Every structure is written in structure tokens, then in C-alpha cells.
Image (cartoon, rainbow, N blue to C red; front, top):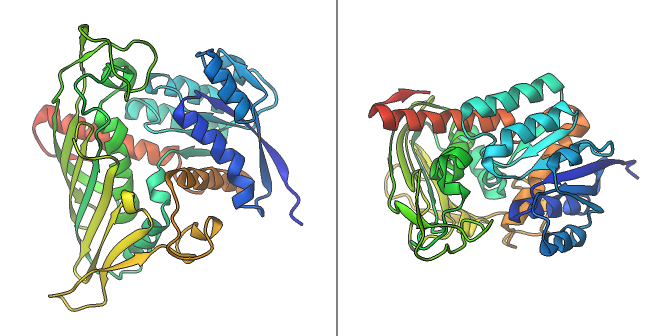
Length: 386
């Protein structure tokens, strides 16, 4: 029998993502019983002191709720902290977490820009703790299989990479002017929100980006003010408008270190799109395509001639990534929440081995550098080396 030790968990920010982190920690031992760390949910820090939040904190298994996240970090019974607050607080929260000696799981974008993210990465390295960043899409078993096809040379020399992250969460013109639409709080618009995921997925699968040129667009310029602390899915107060300060859309042409050319498009006002996230890669000997909405499927064209080749659909199975920790046989669906359990697992592995496993704050820094490069390219109307 594996002798395990307790990994004491705190969460800062208990909205949708904070609750998902909590559930991921709670499920970890069930999916990975051989892990030498057993998470224990200890406390939450969140300034929203509503009855609904208190009920949710209790329902998720935490014993205490602090109104100030600093009070959470003042405790002496935490080993790891999830940072799931709004973007403008990420840098201060994350640096305080690691300077207190705790390991860090932080949602993307880690900082509002590369400078803030670099400060977090430096603090992590200086403190000697482990980190994880919330790039969950790279954890899909089908993506792990796709990445292995690239690494094994099955696709040959990569030629093109297309990455697409489109959503409709901001498509309604009456959507509230939440913090995501304000630069001081968000840092950027869809670039930090969705394009950061897109560049990480492209980087993870196809290699580093060495140059890019980008364009952006703001399609809904004013939104009704928020009635409270609602999410960016909420409707605003009719008749009272505020200015949207950041972009609804960003597109880029990419040049990869290996010579491939790429396209990236990310948008938050795309009517008809709900989580329209995916990647397609073509090499000179094969290709693959993946759509998050069919997460357990990978369309592949390999082992055929150069012309008239067709695709077949491979269903994720026990040979792909972490699939076997969740399902017993191929074709049984996994979900978004499962990808976050894998994130928690890889951070726990990092802590157990004192060495990084999975996406870390360094990966968040690279994504932030590429997002900043897009912003620079847009302002200069030119190609930018990355």
C-alpha cells in the first residue's frame, strides 16, 4: 500500500474556476490512488461574503472562509494554493503565495502582461516551490496523441498550423461591462483570455513561435454597466453604458522555429460559437485536426500517399495521455473538468518529485510574451520577432 502524506489546499477566489479547482483537488486521489500526496481542502479566501458563497464553500468541503486572501495566507496549515481571482490581482496574490513558501496553481493569464508574469516566474524560482498554469486544453488525451505524432515525425516536416479559439460569451450587446472589458483589471481583452490558450496549444504541439504579425478588432464598443459582481455572461443595467476598453477579436500570422507557418484567430463575440476551440496541423507526410467540442476525437491523415489521402477518426483510448485514469475503454467521453484534474495531478507530481511536470508559470510567461508581441505588432503595424 502506498504511504501518502497530506497536501493541504487553499483557494483564492471562489467563482466558477475556484470551485472547479476545489473539485479537481477533491477528485485527485480517486483518479490517482497511487499518488503519494492526498489533498485535503482547508480554507478559501474570497471578498464576496454572500450566503450563496458560504454555502458553496461548505458544500465543497472547506472548513473556513476568509474575507481577505491575505488572512488565508497567514494560516500555518497550507501547502498549496490555487489562485483564481481576477486578472489584476494575480500578480500580487501569486507572489505572496510563493513567498509564503506554498506551491502555486494559477489560472491564465498569470499576469496582465509579460512583465507581471515574469515577476511571478521569478518569485517561483527564488522560493524553490512548484507551479502549475491553467492551460487545460493541452491535457486532452487526443492532444497528447497529436503531439506524439509530431514528435515521432509521423507528419513529416510541419508546414502549417491553424489554431482557432472562438466563443460567443460577449456576443450579446447587452452583456454587462464586467472587469474583463476593462484594461486596468484585465490587461487585455480576448488576447489574454482566449488567445493565450491558443498560443500555448500551438506552442505545445508544434513548437515555439519566432515571429508574428497581428491585427485586432473591437466590435461592441459600449456595454451596459454591471449590476454587481456578476460574470461576463451576465446582462447589464439597461440605459447606462460604459466604454469597452479592449479587443473582441485578435488574429495573427505565425512563423514557427521549425519553419512552419501558422494562423491564429480568437474572438469572444462570435455568434454561433460556444467553445469553438481547435487546432489543425499539416506536415509534408500527414495531418491532424482536433476540435474541443469533440474532445475525445482526433482526425488524422497518416500513412497514405501525398495526394488523395483521406482522414480517419481516432477515438481517445487508454494509450493516450491520462485517459486511463478516467475511463476504462476507448470512445467513452471525458469532459472539461477532467482536464483540470489532470492539471492538479501534474502539479502534485511536481511537488512529490520536486521537479516541474506539466504546464508551469514558465509556460504562462511564454504565452504572455507572445500575447504582448501581438499587441506590439498591432501598434506598429508590422512583423515582430518573439
